[in-house]
Amino acid sequence: MEFMRKGLRQSGILIILASSLAVFGTACSYLDLLKRPTSRAASPSPQLAVQTPASPQKSPTPAKPKPSLSPAVAYERALDLAANATTIAESAQSPDDWSLAVSRWQEAISLLKAVPNSSPYSKDAKSKITQYQQQLADATKRAKGAKTNIAQSPNQSAAKDPKTPVTVTMGESTGIEPTTAPEVFTIPIKRRSGGAPVIDVTFNGSQTFEMILDTGASNTLITQKMADALAIVPAGKTKADTASSNGVEFSFGYVSSMAAGGIVATDVQVSIAGSGLDLGLLGHDFFGKYDVTIKRDVVELQEQK
Image 1: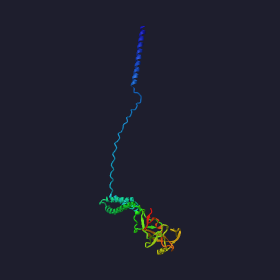
Image 2 (image 1 turned 90 degrees about the vertical axis):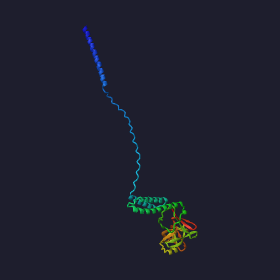
Image 3 (image 1 turned 180 degrees about the horizontal axis):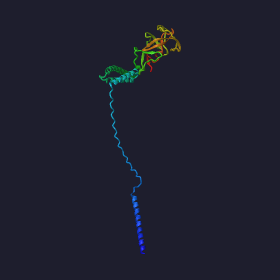
Image 4 (image 1 turned 60 degrees about the horizontal axis):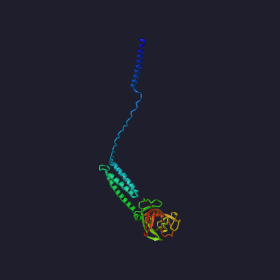
């Protein structure tokens, strides 16, 4: 009996020890598990936005002054400006054109004055300055004159100086450059025939005849007496319109020139009338490019625009 008790006590002790060992092992395993690092991926730490300070704006660099031209370049540029001014002056038709020419001459002179005395261009520059100043004075005068002409009405325009005639070739352009104020040519009226003005017309620069300025005649018609005096040889037949008839047939010939009131026409074909015509008729082939105004004592021929 006692043996059985001992056995039971020993068995109990063994059970208790086994249980204690099991509990201790479990606890150690749990502690060991707690000590191990976890396998979770570390979440990235949020990046802080770093603002880069804006770089300060640079102040604008002041423009460098343009270097002065060398004497050679200044001299050549002055010559170019002078050539340009000459071209403008040759075709100037308005105050603005002449003002532009004046500006070019002034620039050219200014560049030449900048050429130093030590430069090999100095002598030529001084000579050009004198020449260009004369051109400048002329262009300035013409610019003022052009402005004055614009301010005037056509009736205020001065008559063309008969000493400087305008040459007109039949069938060709007059060659007259249009101006801001049309030219007005004045021809004195000597008398009247049937109400039409009679004026003097000079042929071939030497012989003057009275002729009727006939606004209804398409061609100039001379008398047989005039043809004989001018030694005109008939070259053929032609038809012309007169104030009284149309398509009248006449012989025709040529004269070297015809002039009246400062207008000169060269190489003119004229029709030759029969013996029944006492006065020649000055027709549209002479004054067709002009507006004709017949006044009491003069005939005014104004250039058409």
